[in-house]
Length: 69
Image 1 (cartoon, rainbow, N blue to C red):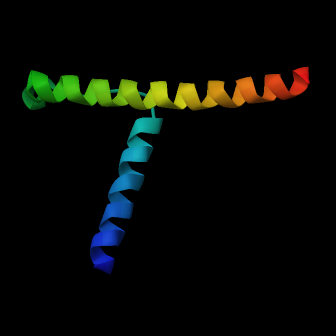
Image 2 (image 1 turned 135 degrees about the vertical axis):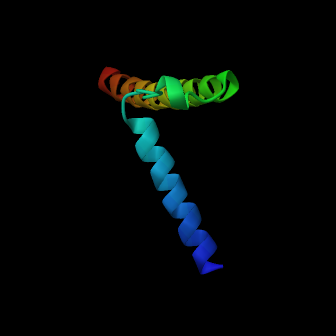
């Protein structure tokens, strides 16, 4: 079970790292994945980035609300 947990942590770290870098698909004409895969990759990236923006804006709102007290 420890191996599975370690693998899950490594996979989560890999995806977090991938989502935190600029979206550059890097597809070549010879190795372009199917449209569905490309769309899913782009949507997952956009969803992650929107979530990050939402968290940052929520923190900003909290700070601004505290300053207004």
